[in-house]
Length: 83
Image (tube, rainbow, N blue to C red):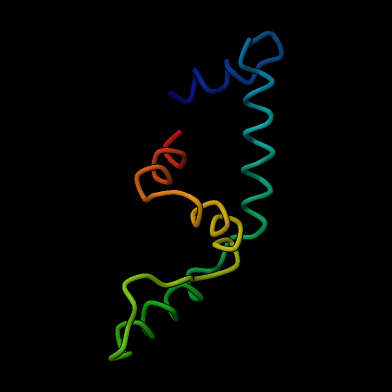
């Protein structure tokens, strides 16, 4: 699979533009990722809290996805994350 990804990024590939856009979007997303420690703190707080919610927001990167998620069903949201 790694070999085909390299070919798709090459300048002669018909997928080159799409792969470049995906890579730049991924790099931007990586800048806002939360640390594992931050996420662990949210999980621990959720376990300890007797009035706990079923879902928690854990970290800065969730702020990017939350506005998108609010306007669609779980099935729709998971579909776009898989593509």
